[in-house]
Amino acid sequence: MPTEAVLRLGGGCTTTFPRVRGHMVSQALSRVDDNALIREAQRGNRVAFEDLVRHYDHAVLRLALRLTGSEHDAQDIYQEAFLKAYRNLGSFRFECSFYTWIYRIVTNLCLDHLRKRQVRKEDTAVTVNQEGSEYNLLDNVADDRAVFNPERDLMRRELGRKIGLALNRLTPRERMVFELKHYQGLKLRTIGEMLSTTEETAKNTLFRATQKLRGALAEMR
Amino acid sequence: MNCDLVKQNIVFYVYDELADDARYEMEQHLGRCQTCAGELKQARDFRADMSSAPHAQLEPSPNFLAASRMRLQESLETTEQRQGWRRWVFDPVAWLHQVRFAPALAAAIFIFGFAGGVVATFQSRHSGVAETTSTAGSPTEASIAGIREIAQEPGSNKVKISYDRLQPSWKEGSIDDPAIQQLLLYAARNQTNSGVRVNSINLLSQQGDDSRVREALVFALRYDKNPGVRLKALDGLQAYVKDDTRVRDAIIEALLHDSNSGVRTQAIRMLQPVKADSTVRGAFDHLAKEDQNVFIRKEAKRVLGSLPEID
Image (cartoon, rainbow over all chains, first blue to last red; front, side):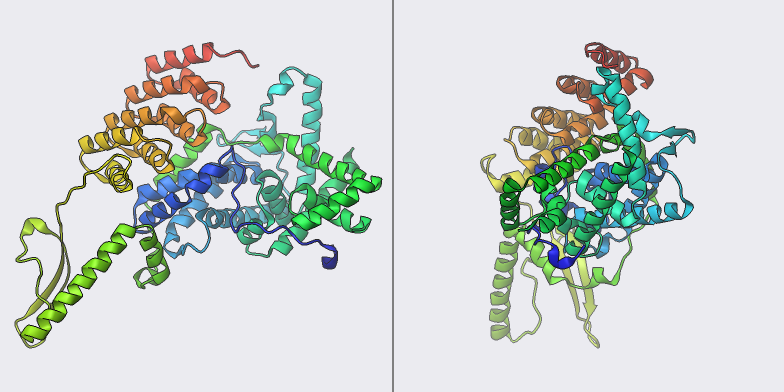
């Protein structure tokens, strides 16, 4: 994508919160409380750290689950991310929000995982649960609308399968930017911060990802 | 704006990533160009397709989240924080940040420092003695909070001991007074006396909608060792169950894992108005099948029985 043809991006605040179950306002309000908890945790108060974890762990687990498609891998990433955050909390300097910081850790771990999987050429559609048995995670997603229209449910599953395949064709970085933009609703500026890159690079990556996905979905129709 | 430029930026328009002026120009173009309007429709259809796929609705179940939390808690018990050299370096930015959130403390430090300076200057001028003497008389063991530093003057029998003293104090005021509220929030989290915690939680519950109070009540519900305090915190959270999903999650957690059956029974009662929520339903379903407490199992079945069938 030629850089000169790109329009100027809208300015946003440094940290934009995701639209996670309507939490945007409450997360913004809890920023000050977070800082108090971080200071307590930096003094070695583990209960304060656990409280901090609970502010973000649902979103972290969901991101890991969507990117890995495996409960087992998602839990490993969740565990490693928060342990890493706990060990290195002393170096957190309040230069960005804790939210951006923990997401930076999680996205790095997820990228590593996606890269390793790409080398092994694994398929995410079928996965292994915590008990060790194989199943398709996406088959378990409930859709109340399907109760009234089985045909629609079938089409939805078919579309889901195609989307899954198309997402797997993206590079790890494209997949990550698309996930954070489309499904987590983050601003490109925040995504750039989380991935330790510029807003411009995140923007180009999103452009490439959407072009590839649209092309792949058109091919499959 | 021409068609090429629109084509290359349509995705950022759909994802709300264009500046206002660029957005305006694009809308002007889209209004008069049928081809680009078709491009916009395709981009919107793509976004809708991606959002309606099962992938978009993939959520960790409450049980999976609870299991992940337990595993993390176990690991944290054996994990140490890295004690980097930075911990020992004075960070003026962090210090200023702290002072910003504690104006009373900042004022106290300033007044104390100013008064100390005046006293020290006055004494050194009039007595010619270089060292600073205690301004608080002889210390008694009960009033000492901690010894900061002990230093002996080389070649003499003089010793300098720096220490902190505990100063009993009280504060009187309206429940709406921010200073009173701050003390109540402190008492709710830090007091070792559970009677004090019950009183502070009780008073905080009477406050209007305040995120700090809500946080303190959720904290007490999750971590307080005294079931009476947890019950009081539950009472205080009643008003937020419908609108705040974080409060709801905390109550679900109490319902699933609290060691006290009274707290769990109260949680069942509080979650009844939001029983249609899939997470709440999942929790009740889990309890109805697997809980060891017969009463809780029966109650969970009763709540599930009052729900319309979904599958």
